[in-house]
Structures are given as C-alpha cells and as structure tokens.
Image (cartoon, rainbow, N blue to C red; front, top):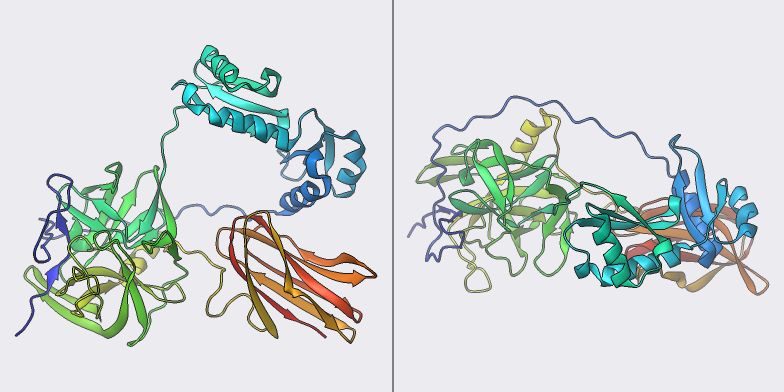
Length: 482
C-alpha cells in the first residue's frame, strides 16, 4: 500500500508543540511567494595583522605574574605592554613593544573583576557592565547611576582605587546564536533552522511566505522571511535582526555541535545526519537513497529532492541534513512518511530540498553559507606528514608529542603541524634537548587552531610542545624527521 508523504511543520497557535498522530501540514497561505530584489554585498573586513597578538602571547608567558596587559594604538601598529616591574622594560622593547609600568597586574585586575562578578546581583539595573581596561590599569564600571556603582563596589569589597566609574546610557540586550536544527516559530507554525547564511538562515519554503515574521525558540523576535518558494521547490531564507548571530553549527543534541565546512553535494550511498527541533534527542543518521526525487504533496509537487532513510517528525521541517563526516551541508528537511517516535526511526523515507538552489540565489545578493575551516577531517591540515599522533588539551595546558620526544640520527629538515578544533587558539613549539635542557628552536603562534613549523637541524633528540593558549579540545600533531 502506498504511503502518504506529508510536510513536517507543526501548528503553533499557543506557542506549544501540538500532539499529532501523523505529520501535520504547514501551509503558508501564500500561493505565489516572491523573491526580494538583490541587495548590496556586505563590505569585507580588512585582513587582520597578528603581530600584536604574537607580542602579547609571548610576553604574557615571559613576564608571568608581572604582566599587566597589552593594547594597540590608533595607528594599528604601535603595541604597548604593561608590567608591574620597571625592570621588564628591556624585555618588552626587545619584543617590539613600548613598555609601561603600572600598579596592578593582569591577574590582580582579573581578581577584582571576579569579586564584582560574585556580587553581580547587588549591581542594580542601572549598572550596565564592568570590564578590565589594561590601558587605564583599572576595572571600569559603566553605569547610569554613579551612586549605584559606588554602592556596588562597596558590596564587592574591591579596593575603590582599582575601579574607574564611567557614566553611560547603554542598555545591553541579550544576543542569540542561530544554530542548524534548532526550533523557530512563525505566527502559525513551528519549524527548524537548516543552516546559517550571512544575515540569517535558510529553511523550508512551506514554513512561511515572504514577509512573514519569525521568533526564536525562546520567543524573542528574530526576523522576516526574505524569500520563499513552495511548491515546485521547498526552500526559504529568513533575514534576522541584530540580536541573532549566524554560526557554522548544527546541533547534535548531545551537548556538542557539528561544524559546517562547506556544501559539496554528496553521492548516493553517503552517510548523512539530520537535526531538527522536534526530534531533539540526538542527531538522526542514515544514507542518501536517491537524488533528484519528486514528491507529490497535497499542496503540489516538489522536484529535485534528496531521498533518505532517516526518520523525521512534525516540526522538523526546515532542519539540517549534513554529511556524517566532513561537515558538508546537503539539504533542508521538507517532508516524509515515517516517524522517530519508536526511538530508532521507522526506516521510512524523508525528503530534503538540496541547499544548492537557495545558496545560488543568495550568492547573487552577496550572501553565503556560514562555514568554518580547520579542524580534523578529510583533507586535514596535517595531511602529508610521515607520522601523526593525537591528544586533548584543556585551556592553558601543554602537552609534549610524540609521547615525550623522538630522536633523529641525521641532519636535515624537521617539519611539524598541529590541527586543533575550530574556535580555539593552539600553538606549536619544536624543542631540542641540549645537555639536560630543552630549548625551543622553532615555533608557530598565530591566532587560530592550526600551526606549522619547519626547522633545519642537526641530529639529536626533539619534541613538540602543543600549548592551548585559549580553548580546549582534541588535536592532531603531524611530523616528519630527517
């Protein structure tokens, strides 16, 4: 007996997920959605110069407890480094920075800020923020009421001389991330985000017509459908407001996220996973069964879909389909004939709109899929090295690889790399044993997760030091010895 394929939106008349025995139809009520005119491309930021970052990182480690912060002048080049010890000036100049002697160390200011944090509830609504300011060697409190800020300082027990109170009319508001697979609401339906694009996200066309407003899963105003196509196709994009930040993430519903790295179309048989706001107990995975499938919904036919054996339920519409490895965005959840209610997936079919068509349209507006490079995976950063080892670091910690050290019996080139997870700053140091002392002979300390070094050295004993300057996670070290 033939199965009926149904769309996977959910009704939202009360803001609650409706209890439905079968997938519900989420009709937009718009018979002919239109596309907006092309928008000007956003201005790309200028390339960053990491010189200041390198100076800060190196001097923070060299000065230790004497370090009191660093900053770049308005000219974009002059770097000032503060220290609590005037004798540090020579080392600071040698590193290429201008020294400044101050009363309080970075650690001391951080301690004062922590004391304020512990008494945050006593700050009152007129105090908008507080932060460490290395340039003034103080903790700055921004407030609409000086009296309230002073009361806050007294309650925290912080030395008032370490605090600078600044009057400000600022009224900060929360900002929220856009994450693939998570719930959003229209005025009528609950659907799911597929993938972030610059200025918003893509989703299913049957979830909303052009001009319809959306709110996030937290019911905070989110954006407006900028374009929608259904039937024939089943895609749409939502232009979000400034409170919402697009991210290269898909929720795996286990406390972690899959990183989106691209949108290369995968062939039949590829393992793929689906994320949606209703079946938010795990990432549901299966395989691509067919490409270019046509589904005949009651509202009309949709063409060129990806057919999979992954289950889905009402409210998963618009959610993400991504490759199980490699982070390649594939599709937008459209509809299907199965259910995930048994906890395993029924094995029935779910169909997905390929992401290629909406991404091509958005590219004409100067917009693109939000992705993030680096990290382990096919074509990884450390490919081509003779030996690879792995490890895991907490922020601020170091490890030595491979298992302590290695010996080279000949002179020649030592090449090494570290491939860290996205969003961290890992550094790499090649060290050589001289007598009983390890000396750094090459290093790479750029801001980011991935580093490479190359060193022409003599025979001897070597090791790589991997340092988590900021952020935590697993990494791969690759190395080649003479």
